[in-house]
Length: 269
Image 1 (cartoon, helix red, strand yellow):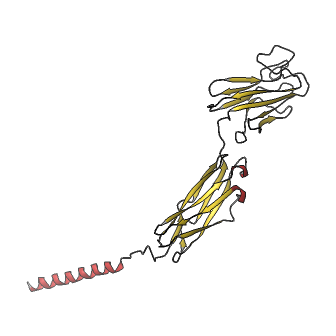
Image 2 (cartoon, one colour):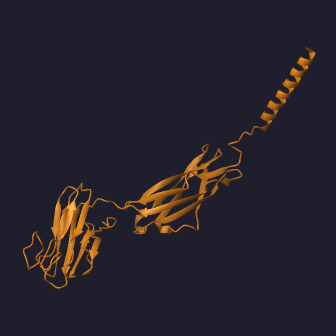
Image 3 (spheres, one colour):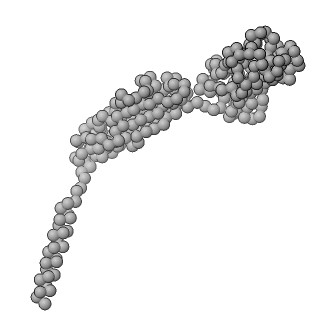
C-alpha cells in the first residue's frame, strides 16, 4: 500500500511540473507597448474613374493602440507609372485608442490615358508614435483607368458630312444606298446622309451634294445608342459626329469609313 501512495505522489509531482512549464511558456501580446506591425488592408485595387471623378478609401491597420492620434505616412513607389496629375493622396490618422485609419486616393479623369490603365504604387513608411514599427503588407498597387458611361448624353448631336466628288453619298451602290443609322434603346431609329442625285433616297437625307450637316436629338432616359455606317462605294465620304457638349466623339476621313458599327467615344461626350 505504501508503494502505491509513493507512486501516486510521483505522478502528482510530474503533472504539476508539466502544468507549471506550460504556464511559463504562454506569451501574452501587449497591444499598447508591444511591437507595432502596420499594414494595408489589401494589396491591390482596381479604380475606375468616371468623368466626375471618384475616390477610394484604403484602410491601414496597426497592431497596437496609442493614447494619442497617430499620423499615417505613405510614399509613392518608384515602380509607379501614374503621373502626379492623375491622382491625389490624402492621408489621415489613426485616432487615439484605435487600431486603424484610412488613406484616400482620388483619381483625375481628365489626366488619365484615354485607353488602358496606369499604376499607382504606394508604400507605408511610418505610423507616428508607434513602438518598434515594422510592416506587413506595406505595398498597395492601384490600377487607375477611365470609366466611361455606356449611355449617350441626352441633347442635340450634330453630324457633319462631306463628299469629295460633290455628288452626294453613294454608300452601298454606285448610285446611292442608306445613310448612317442611329438606333436608340427605345427602338427609335435615325438615318442621316447627303442625298444622291442618281436615285430616289429612301430616307430624309441632307440636300447638299458636297458638304452638309444635320442633327438628331437623343432624349433623357436612353440607355444606349448604336451608330452604324453602311459603307463608301467610291471612297469619297467623310463624316464627323459631335456630342451635345461640342466634343468630337467619332470621325472618318475621306475614303476611310469602313462599313460597320461606328465606335463612339462616350468618354468625350
